[in-house]
Length: 274
Image 1 (spheres, rainbow, N blue to C red):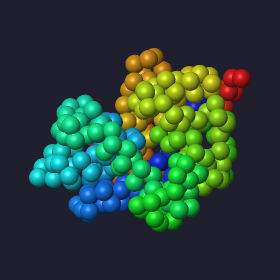
Image 2 (cartoon, helix red, strand yellow):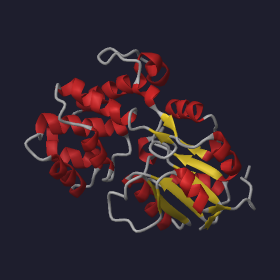
Image 3 (cartoon, rainbow, N blue to C red):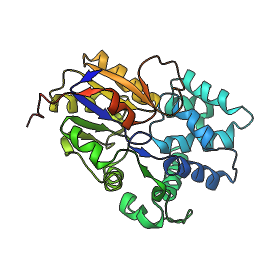
Image 4 (tube, rainbow, N blue to C red):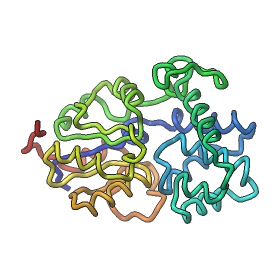
C-alpha cells in the first residue's frame, strides 16, 4: 500500500490510554454513583458505536446507565444508544430529562479530576481536584511510536484527536516528538470534532495529499474517513488494535502503528504548503 500522507488518532494509536483515559472514566462513574458495575469493558463497548470519541461522554453515559438504566444489560443499553443515533443525543433518547447540563458537567469534572490528578489537573483544566484526589491517571500512559520511528514520516504526518490542546501537549511530551501546529487538529469546537471531516481536510490540503491513510481505533475514526470520502477526499482507514475491529470491517488492520509502518509505503515527493 502506497500513500503520500499518514494521519494518526492519538489515544489507543500513538498512546496507550487503557490505564489513563479509560481508567479515569471508570473512576468518575464510581465516584459519582458509588457503584463499580461500570468497568473498562463497558467503556470499550461505547467506543464501538458512533458519538463517543470524547471520553467524558463515555463517563456521562456510564453514570446514566448505572443511575437510570441498570436493569438493562449494558450491551442492550449501548445498542439502543446507537439505534437512536449514538453519542449524547442517542443517550438522551433513553434517559430523557435526567441528562441535564448539571449531570454532564459533574461527570466531566470528575473524569478530568481522575485523569489530570493533583499533578496536572490545574494545568489541563484550570482547577484543583476536589472529589478524586490522586496523582492522575495520565501518569499511566505509555507511548506507542518512538521519536526514531516518527522522524522519517513527520513531514508527511498529521494528527486528528479528541484531545484538547493542553492534553495534546502532554501527549507530545510523553512521545518525545511533535508535529507542526498546521498538521495537528485538536478538540476546540465540539461541532468540528470527529466525525466532522473539516479539520482532516485542512491537514490534507496543507500536506498537498493525493492519497492518505488514517490510523484509528474507534468507530468515530472510521466514520470520519467515510465522511471525508463523501467530501471527495482520497483517504483510507486502517484499524489499529490487537483484536479485530469490534464492528463490521474488512479493510486493513494492524496490531500497532509500528507494524503498520512496516507494511505501508509513505512517499515524500510533496512538501507541506506554506
